Length: 632
Image 1 (cartoon, rainbow, N blue to C red):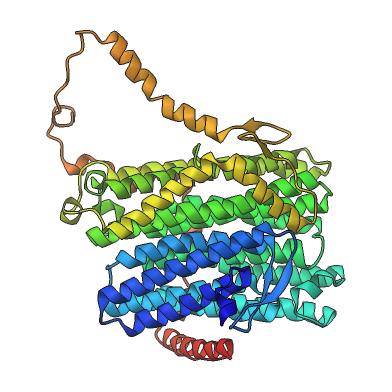
Image 2 (tube, one colour):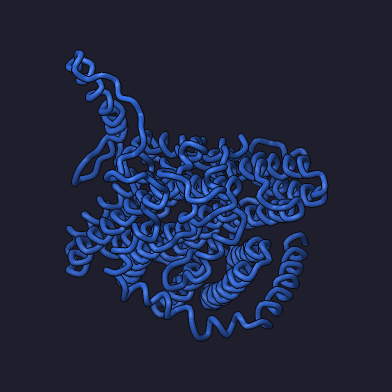
């Protein structure tokens, strides 16, 4: 037991896993004592996340990959630079989700306790899955995490929640089946499911390609790659807000991590067509995710579609790295994978801000439909500031963290354009233009979400009566928003760490991509700290000019009612979410009809009564069996 409290990566990881499980169980048993239960769940989650963050930092200080057995719990964990980075990307958002959960009271006491237990089970499963040293443990832990997500989605117990839970359950089972087939195929050739053995095994081209395609479908279902995304939008809308944030920042990122491991780490150098196929899927996911987001009025469904957009952006980097390896272009491969890993980390930060902010709005107003909100900036100023920073980061505006990682991705696409292969020279500019279009859609989303939700006049009595969220909830989103600013400004000093991880995955030398506060590439360079200073100083210039030239000619103005062409201003005059997106709805009508076609036929049959009830019973049985296996 003393080994559990030693400051080693293995002991800290074991401690984190035990705290998640024990605090989740204790909080659920004390559901009747609401404050005590919330403190145990929230405080335990924060303590476990801090222990996992400490372990990740210790792993990153090392230089080699090693497999260790965690003390107390019999689990073999692979400690590598990639796994440490994934651990940070999962647990930093989890830290603030636990703080949010401490103050969350949007559900009754029993549901709050169950959601705490399930969130802790989800986090423990995902952390262990990302550290797994063999395929059997990875698949079992992913299945356990998917089942925890299923019960989190079904907590609402309304029709939409049951439909969303059934979609997620079926998608998860198909994903697990594909992963089982992929690793069974590799096992038949290598004779082992250990990742270290797979790395040193030789596979034929047909075995590698078949296993990659099966794994791409399996991990792609977890990641929500379009067209495998059916479970994503309503699942994020039905689960508790902090659980939805964990879906985006942890569950779906584990799917991306699986694609990185299978495509670049475990089964040898990828052929060119793997990277090209992944690039096309990524662009499809990014563009359609952004396009569908603009049509949503439910703020959480909108954010879920934007998660799909960012999943596509991350996979553009992963696909670019595969192409770079196939074409023997180490700079392209390193830069593209660096951009993917950095954006994976950044997306977890700003998307968690947005989901937690949406949760604050939902708790204080009881509304998720943006058409019924408005005027919340005056009533919930802390939430408004955090949401604005998160939205600006999502749209990759400088000097925030989303800009830093997307800028690197643009640089990798420019490198792709300079390749000697014709298909790469063709795809590079097209993908850069596609990425710019998704950026334009994200900018429109800022105007829609912030303008319709926080500005103008309230459109409902609930919005007019809104008040600031509890301190713990406000602090979680504001502190994460501050972290988005800090990571963006400090990007040149953080990028070398991500570059080292990228080089470790690709078994290549680290590229000098940042120095003296400037992020550089063979194409261009940019200084996020200088951009931040310029943006902070720009508002001072008109103020100084006003002071110098004002004199007595411009008296102070008095506030009055808004000018409305001679008519009295009313709330109905404020732009609505429907009106804002109407031009795009008309312009891209054929593409929006594709989504309507996908919701008919077989999907409606699956939601007719008995399949949902059968799947719920199967989920209970499977969860019980997996828990027995895990603890045994």
